[in-house]
Length: 164
Length: 198
Image 1 (cartoon, chains in turn green, purple):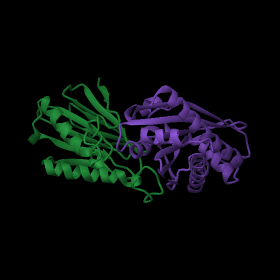
Image 2 (cartoon, rainbow over the protein chains, first blue to last red):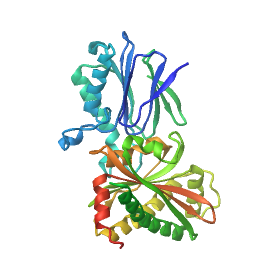
Image 3 (cartoon, rainbow over the protein chains, first blue to last red):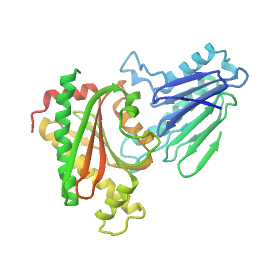
Image 4 (cartoon, rainbow over the protein chains, first blue to last red):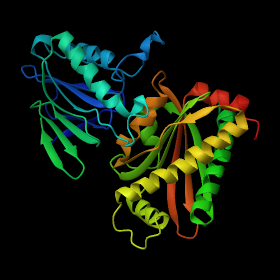
């Protein structure tokens, strides 16, 4: 029996309890999932925006997963505290949708793709392989990330499950 | 923002919701009851728990972002069945079996009329603020995923948001829709200071 750990908007969860599944719902936000398969440490961040405050606030956010740059570093630090080795960590991600039609009129309507692009860039910079992703389109995704297996299950309305 | 200020802000937003209710009534030639629930300040991550909707619940939503002297996100949402019925009425059709592309466009335009045309217009008249409305976006998906765009827009530089939830009900046909107004604390203070009752 699994225990679901809900990750809130802008939040983070890290676990090495193999009975746990980290879960969140994403639209234009991205569920970033990192995994150390040897130590079986998993982390999930619900990333809302590409950068921390565009420099306007020196304190950034109290929400550890809100901004892509802070989310990756916070996940790596929290996973290391539970025994993960950065060189073994692999990434998967899902979300980044364009939720409302009539796109192109405002930056909000392509924030999803910008979130995903920024995460790809940061992961590359940190040397973390992005092994699979399910990004874009115009629908929400329910994501479940298993601490035991590192499998990311993505459930989409009217079209079933995808396993990453 | 203290309790009294939030209460006052609720009254102000309620008056703009009243204008939106009036135009919804004209659109359907029917009386519209409106009720603004409590106005709250909270961390954006608490939003989904504070609103009277199930996160995985499928909804039809129209989103309009207001930008200018004040920034706010306004989400109008209703059940798919109610959206089908309203779309059919707007299009002069008897059947409401499926929400077609034309039906979706009609719902988006309804949102545009009551949110941009009435709500934001009432706000501008009462404050003198210039607020530019985005093109209305329409989506059908899980409530929680449709809450993200307005949250991202308003909470890009703050973790605190002000949220007001209102219900509009077409009295004769008993069809309800929810209007969610999200703004940042700075914008809320500006509204309080500048609202003059229009």
